[in-house]
Image 1: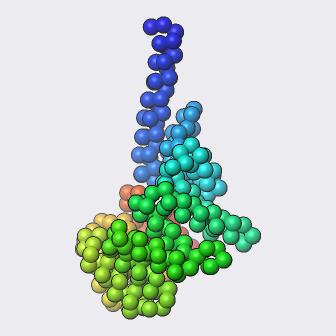
Image 2 (image 1 turned 30 degrees about the vertical axis):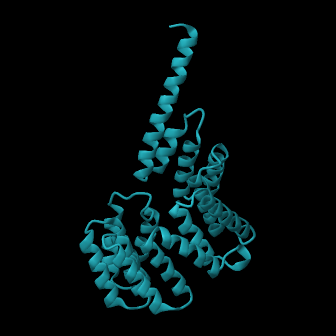
Image 3 (image 1 turned 120 degrees about the vertical axis):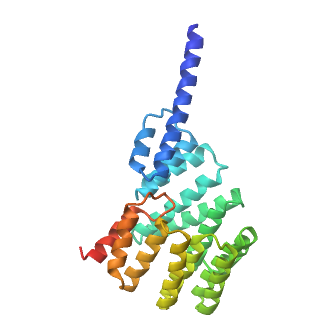
Length: 284
Protein backbone atom coordinates (compact mmCIF):
# COMPACT_ATOMS: atom_id res chain seq x y z
CA UNK A 1 0.00 0.00 0.00
CA UNK A 2 1.42 3.40 -1.03
CA UNK A 3 1.42 6.49 1.18
CA UNK A 4 -1.65 7.93 -0.55
CA UNK A 5 -3.52 4.65 -0.10
CA UNK A 6 -2.45 4.46 3.54
CA UNK A 7 -3.73 7.99 4.19
CA UNK A 8 -7.02 7.13 2.50
CA UNK A 9 -7.28 4.04 4.67
CA UNK A 10 -6.70 6.08 7.84
CA UNK A 11 -9.34 8.62 6.81
CA UNK A 12 -11.87 5.89 6.06
CA UNK A 13 -11.12 4.12 9.33
CA UNK A 14 -11.46 7.39 11.22
CA UNK A 15 -14.85 8.05 9.63
CA UNK A 16 -16.06 4.55 10.47
CA UNK A 17 -14.83 4.95 14.05
CA UNK A 18 -16.79 8.21 14.31
CA UNK A 19 -19.95 6.45 13.12
CA UNK A 20 -19.48 3.65 15.65
CA UNK A 21 -18.87 6.18 18.44
CA UNK A 22 -21.99 8.12 17.48
CA UNK A 23 -24.11 4.96 17.47
CA UNK A 24 -22.79 3.95 20.88
CA UNK A 25 -23.27 7.50 22.18
CA UNK A 26 -26.88 7.44 21.00
CA UNK A 27 -27.44 4.12 22.78
CA UNK A 28 -26.14 5.69 26.01
CA UNK A 29 -28.42 8.70 25.47
CA UNK A 30 -31.43 6.41 25.03
CA UNK A 31 -30.52 4.81 28.39
CA UNK A 32 -30.35 8.33 29.94
CA UNK A 33 -26.59 8.00 30.62
CA UNK A 34 -26.07 11.51 29.30
CA UNK A 35 -22.61 12.18 30.74
CA UNK A 36 -21.22 8.94 29.33
CA UNK A 37 -22.76 9.75 25.96
CA UNK A 38 -21.04 13.14 25.93
CA UNK A 39 -17.71 11.65 27.00
CA UNK A 40 -17.80 9.19 24.12
CA UNK A 41 -18.13 12.02 21.61
CA UNK A 42 -15.25 14.12 22.96
CA UNK A 43 -12.69 12.50 20.65
CA UNK A 44 -14.66 12.93 17.42
CA UNK A 45 -12.35 15.30 15.57
CA UNK A 46 -14.76 16.68 12.96
CA UNK A 47 -18.28 16.65 14.44
CA UNK A 48 -21.17 16.36 12.00
CA UNK A 49 -24.57 17.93 12.44
CA UNK A 50 -25.72 14.64 13.97
CA UNK A 51 -22.92 14.72 16.54
CA UNK A 52 -23.68 18.32 17.53
CA UNK A 53 -27.40 17.45 17.75
CA UNK A 54 -26.77 14.48 20.06
CA UNK A 55 -24.46 16.62 22.20
CA UNK A 56 -27.19 19.20 22.42
CA UNK A 57 -29.79 16.62 23.47
CA UNK A 58 -27.49 15.37 26.23
CA UNK A 59 -26.84 18.89 27.50
CA UNK A 60 -30.57 19.61 27.36
CA UNK A 61 -31.36 16.55 29.47
CA UNK A 62 -28.66 17.56 31.95
CA UNK A 63 -30.23 21.01 32.29
CA UNK A 64 -27.26 22.78 30.66
CA UNK A 65 -29.40 24.79 28.29
CA UNK A 66 -26.76 27.34 27.21
CA UNK A 67 -24.47 24.52 26.06
CA UNK A 68 -27.47 22.86 24.40
CA UNK A 69 -28.32 25.95 22.35
CA UNK A 70 -24.67 26.31 21.32
CA UNK A 71 -24.59 22.70 20.10
CA UNK A 72 -27.89 22.89 18.21
CA UNK A 73 -26.85 26.17 16.56
CA UNK A 74 -23.71 24.44 15.25
CA UNK A 75 -25.80 21.50 14.03
CA UNK A 76 -28.24 23.80 12.22
CA UNK A 77 -25.39 25.81 10.70
CA UNK A 78 -24.02 22.61 9.16
CA UNK A 79 -27.43 21.36 7.99
CA UNK A 80 -29.83 24.33 7.80
CA UNK A 81 -32.64 22.29 6.27
CA UNK A 82 -32.96 19.90 9.24
CA UNK A 83 -36.24 20.49 11.02
CA UNK A 84 -35.13 18.38 14.00
CA UNK A 85 -32.23 20.72 14.76
CA UNK A 86 -34.40 23.86 14.61
CA UNK A 87 -36.98 22.17 16.83
CA UNK A 88 -34.48 21.23 19.52
CA UNK A 89 -32.98 24.70 19.33
CA UNK A 90 -36.44 26.09 20.02
CA UNK A 91 -36.86 23.73 22.97
CA UNK A 92 -33.51 24.80 24.42
CA UNK A 93 -34.28 28.50 24.14
CA UNK A 94 -37.65 27.77 25.71
CA UNK A 95 -35.99 26.22 28.75
CA UNK A 96 -33.55 29.12 28.93
CA UNK A 97 -36.56 31.45 29.00
CA UNK A 98 -38.07 29.46 31.87
CA UNK A 99 -34.84 29.46 33.89
CA UNK A 100 -33.37 32.91 33.19
CA UNK A 101 -33.94 36.36 34.66
CA UNK A 102 -36.90 38.54 33.71
CA UNK A 103 -34.48 40.67 31.68
CA UNK A 104 -33.36 37.90 29.33
CA UNK A 105 -36.41 35.60 29.43
CA UNK A 106 -38.41 37.50 26.75
CA UNK A 107 -35.51 37.35 24.29
CA UNK A 108 -35.07 33.60 24.81
CA UNK A 109 -38.82 33.03 24.53
CA UNK A 110 -38.98 34.89 21.22
CA UNK A 111 -36.13 32.80 19.87
CA UNK A 112 -37.93 29.64 20.98
CA UNK A 113 -41.00 30.69 19.00
CA UNK A 114 -38.92 31.59 15.93
CA UNK A 115 -37.18 28.21 15.90
CA UNK A 116 -40.42 26.28 16.47
CA UNK A 117 -41.91 28.14 13.51
CA UNK A 118 -38.78 27.43 11.46
CA UNK A 119 -38.91 23.72 12.33
CA UNK A 120 -42.53 23.50 11.18
CA UNK A 121 -41.76 25.45 8.00
CA UNK A 122 -38.90 23.07 7.20
CA UNK A 123 -41.03 19.97 7.75
CA UNK A 124 -44.80 20.14 8.18
CA UNK A 125 -44.72 16.46 9.12
CA UNK A 126 -42.69 17.16 12.26
CA UNK A 127 -45.53 16.53 14.72
CA UNK A 128 -43.41 17.15 17.81
CA UNK A 129 -42.47 20.60 16.50
CA UNK A 130 -46.13 21.33 15.74
CA UNK A 131 -47.07 20.29 19.28
CA UNK A 132 -44.40 22.52 20.83
CA UNK A 133 -45.45 25.44 18.63
CA UNK A 134 -49.05 24.89 19.79
CA UNK A 135 -47.92 24.87 23.42
CA UNK A 136 -45.96 28.07 22.89
CA UNK A 137 -48.88 29.92 21.30
CA UNK A 138 -51.20 28.62 24.03
CA UNK A 139 -49.01 29.63 26.97
CA UNK A 140 -47.14 32.75 25.80
CA UNK A 141 -48.64 36.24 26.13
CA UNK A 142 -49.46 38.24 23.03
CA UNK A 143 -46.41 40.52 23.29
CA UNK A 144 -44.22 37.40 22.92
CA UNK A 145 -46.12 36.14 19.90
CA UNK A 146 -48.59 33.88 21.70
CA UNK A 147 -52.36 33.81 21.47
CA UNK A 148 -55.33 31.44 21.50
CA UNK A 149 -56.21 32.13 17.86
CA UNK A 150 -52.73 31.15 16.73
CA UNK A 151 -52.88 28.05 18.95
CA UNK A 152 -56.24 27.10 17.44
CA UNK A 153 -54.84 27.33 13.91
CA UNK A 154 -51.98 24.99 14.84
CA UNK A 155 -54.42 22.65 16.62
CA UNK A 156 -56.37 22.31 13.38
CA UNK A 157 -53.18 21.36 11.55
CA UNK A 158 -52.38 18.80 14.23
CA UNK A 159 -55.87 17.29 13.98
CA UNK A 160 -55.42 16.70 10.24
CA UNK A 161 -52.31 14.61 10.92
CA UNK A 162 -53.35 12.89 14.16
CA UNK A 163 -57.01 12.93 15.13
CA UNK A 164 -56.44 11.82 18.73
CA UNK A 165 -53.76 14.46 19.25
CA UNK A 166 -56.12 16.99 17.71
CA UNK A 167 -58.70 16.26 20.40
CA UNK A 168 -55.99 16.58 23.06
CA UNK A 169 -55.00 20.04 21.81
CA UNK A 170 -58.68 21.01 21.64
CA UNK A 171 -58.97 19.95 25.29
CA UNK A 172 -56.08 22.21 26.27
CA UNK A 173 -57.66 25.16 24.48
CA UNK A 174 -61.02 24.48 26.13
CA UNK A 175 -59.40 24.29 29.56
CA UNK A 176 -57.66 27.63 29.02
CA UNK A 177 -61.01 29.12 28.13
CA UNK A 178 -62.52 27.57 31.28
CA UNK A 179 -64.75 25.31 29.19
CA UNK A 180 -64.09 22.40 31.52
CA UNK A 181 -66.84 20.04 30.34
CA UNK A 182 -65.67 20.47 26.75
CA UNK A 183 -62.07 19.81 27.79
CA UNK A 184 -63.05 16.55 29.48
CA UNK A 185 -65.15 15.52 26.49
CA UNK A 186 -62.22 16.11 24.14
CA UNK A 187 -59.87 14.07 26.35
CA UNK A 188 -62.33 11.19 26.41
CA UNK A 189 -62.62 11.35 22.63
CA UNK A 190 -58.83 11.27 22.28
CA UNK A 191 -58.74 8.18 24.52
CA UNK A 192 -61.44 6.48 22.46
CA UNK A 193 -59.52 7.09 19.23
CA UNK A 194 -56.26 5.68 20.64
CA UNK A 195 -57.42 2.94 23.05
CA UNK A 196 -54.02 1.27 23.21
CA UNK A 197 -52.05 4.41 24.05
CA UNK A 198 -51.67 4.58 27.81
CA UNK A 199 -50.67 8.23 27.55
CA UNK A 200 -54.23 9.13 26.48
CA UNK A 201 -55.61 7.38 29.55
CA UNK A 202 -53.13 9.24 31.77
CA UNK A 203 -54.16 12.57 30.19
CA UNK A 204 -57.73 12.01 31.34
CA UNK A 205 -56.72 10.68 34.78
CA UNK A 206 -54.55 13.73 35.44
CA UNK A 207 -57.25 16.12 34.26
CA UNK A 208 -59.90 14.57 36.49
CA UNK A 209 -57.49 14.83 39.44
CA UNK A 210 -56.87 18.47 38.60
CA UNK A 211 -60.63 19.08 38.63
CA UNK A 212 -60.87 17.47 42.08
CA UNK A 213 -62.77 14.39 40.88
CA UNK A 214 -60.62 12.00 42.85
CA UNK A 215 -62.61 8.75 42.66
CA UNK A 216 -63.02 9.04 38.90
CA UNK A 217 -59.34 9.90 38.51
CA UNK A 218 -58.29 6.85 40.55
CA UNK A 219 -60.48 4.61 38.41
CA UNK A 220 -58.83 5.89 35.23
CA UNK A 221 -55.36 5.51 36.77
CA UNK A 222 -56.33 1.90 37.61
CA UNK A 223 -57.21 1.40 33.96
CA UNK A 224 -53.78 2.72 32.92
CA UNK A 225 -52.04 0.34 35.34
CA UNK A 226 -54.04 -2.59 33.96
CA UNK A 227 -52.94 -1.64 30.45
CA UNK A 228 -49.24 -1.33 31.33
CA UNK A 229 -48.53 -2.66 34.85
CA UNK A 230 -44.80 -1.94 34.70
CA UNK A 231 -44.87 1.35 32.80
CA UNK A 232 -42.58 3.95 34.41
CA UNK A 233 -44.71 6.80 33.05
CA UNK A 234 -47.82 5.38 34.76
CA UNK A 235 -46.00 5.16 38.10
CA UNK A 236 -44.69 8.71 37.81
CA UNK A 237 -48.00 10.22 36.68
CA UNK A 238 -49.95 8.67 39.54
CA UNK A 239 -47.32 9.61 42.11
CA UNK A 240 -47.21 13.18 40.80
CA UNK A 241 -51.01 13.43 41.07
CA UNK A 242 -50.93 12.16 44.66
CA UNK A 243 -48.24 14.67 45.64
CA UNK A 244 -50.16 17.52 43.99
CA UNK A 245 -53.31 16.51 45.88
CA UNK A 246 -51.38 15.89 49.13
CA UNK A 247 -52.92 12.44 49.60
CA UNK A 248 -51.84 8.79 49.50
CA UNK A 249 -48.29 9.99 50.13
CA UNK A 250 -47.06 6.55 51.24
CA UNK A 251 -48.29 5.13 47.93
CA UNK A 252 -46.71 8.07 46.09
CA UNK A 253 -43.38 7.30 47.77
CA UNK A 254 -43.64 3.64 46.76
CA UNK A 255 -44.42 4.58 43.14
CA UNK A 256 -41.54 7.06 42.97
CA UNK A 257 -39.06 4.52 44.29
CA UNK A 258 -40.37 2.05 41.71
CA UNK A 259 -39.91 4.71 39.03
CA UNK A 260 -36.33 5.45 40.06
CA UNK A 261 -35.48 1.76 39.75
CA UNK A 262 -37.09 1.46 36.32
CA UNK A 263 -35.27 1.59 32.97
CA UNK A 264 -36.45 4.96 31.71
CA UNK A 265 -35.84 6.72 28.38
CA UNK A 266 -35.43 10.40 27.43
CA UNK A 267 -39.18 10.45 26.71
CA UNK A 268 -39.96 9.78 30.38
CA UNK A 269 -39.80 12.45 33.11
CA UNK A 270 -36.20 13.01 34.28
CA UNK A 271 -35.03 11.13 37.36
CA UNK A 272 -34.34 14.50 38.98
CA UNK A 273 -38.07 15.28 38.95
CA UNK A 274 -38.86 11.98 40.64
CA UNK A 275 -36.10 12.55 43.21
CA UNK A 276 -37.48 16.02 43.97
CA UNK A 277 -40.99 14.62 44.50
CA UNK A 278 -39.58 11.84 46.66
CA UNK A 279 -37.90 14.40 48.90
CA UNK A 280 -41.21 16.21 49.22
CA UNK A 281 -43.11 13.14 50.37
CA UNK A 282 -40.23 12.06 52.62
CA UNK A 283 -40.20 15.44 54.33
CA UNK A 284 -36.55 16.11 53.45
